[in-house]
Amino acid sequence: MSMLKQLSTKIIIITALLLAVSFGAAAQAYTGYSPYSIFGVGDLNKQSTAYSNTMGGVGIANRTNRYLNVINPASITERDSLSFMADFSLHSNNKVFSQGKLKSANNTFNVNDFIISFPLQRQSAMMLGILPYSDMGFDYSYREKNPGIIGNVGNIEHVTSGQGGMYKVFVAAGVTFFKRLSLGAQFDYYFGKIEKSYSTSFSDASYSSIKNNTVLNARGVGGKFGLQYEQPLGSDIKLTLGATYTTDVNMKGFYTDGSYSVSSAASDTLYYRVDTLGLTKNVKLASEYGVGISIKKANKWMFEMDYTRSDWTQSGIEAISGYSAASTPFKTSISQAYRVGFEYIPNINDVRYLVNRIAYRAGAYHKTEYYLLYGQEVASTGITFGISLPINRMYNALSIGFDFGQRGVLKDDFVRERYFNFTVGMNIFDIWFRKNQYD
Image (cartoon, rainbow, N blue to C red; front, side):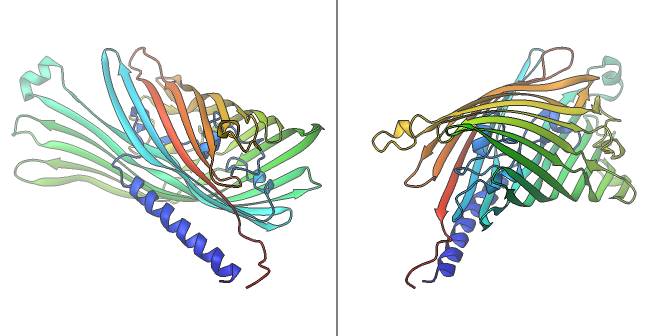
């Protein structure tokens, strides 16, 4: 079998297996669940691999030839020149919600990433894949408590629910100059569907129930640029500076906004409207910039600190009925994140003891969300840790990560969200581009 046939067969097998798992996971009713996801496009994902997630989500200044790093496109040039690499991971999100004396819990499961990468020339490489950009999932109800209203019209129940999300497909390329400066550029395509519904029902059949429904079908094109500069500090020790810039994304597509009257006798459309994004409404995903610094000893240890900032105040989300701040206590804001991460490998070349070849990682982060609630910041703070177990040969590994954290606080009408997230990922590494001596 020729080298080309071998390469094609491997790509087809891996792609088929991973896509089968991906579609199976995506069939879940909710890919994410949180009352905070009611605003805008929902909860924004970290958009990183299991490798980065175990270190608090760092990656702007991270260069490694053992794992794929999707946070900075300039990092993909740090690789073995003949290697093919792939990364696939799944994410489980487990949360406990508290508000006053009320408590509830929810568990969701979703695909975290699917990425492949291969070299172009000696100092350049390419990467492509798909990542979830945002998740929306909520479902809650409450009964009218005003005795005056109940006495006149009977019991009234309000139900609010929403689900959906957005995904990002990307293609990135990078090149290294002078063995120290690496530049990367990335093309991003965003797409997704988000649906929300609000209904009011009456126990007295003489009153008609009201249901409001909004559906957002959106797509958009954006980009990401990154650079990394590596400075040797001594034997096997390097300092790396990194920076990224993600462009804003003008959303295209449409959203529908409707109100319906429902009774035992008949249903009636009270209001129905379709608006075109980019034509009648201007909405965009905010841009983001980030900087990072890392220091490492090759195949031994690494420490990194990152900072990112994104301004959503000009996103135009307030112009979309059902997704705006007008009907809720939310308002767009500036999102910032501080992240630190650490990795340690006792002895990567140990042939006797597996525990010495395991990569041990830990990290922490503090992030403010892209919105205000009742005029106050909503922050997420957490710690992460995990390991990568070497498999068979080369750099193939199974990564397992945990994320403990909290969002929101117990005061006023705020919801405190405590979570325990679990991520498992597979890193695939092979030499696919070596020329055969015999055919």
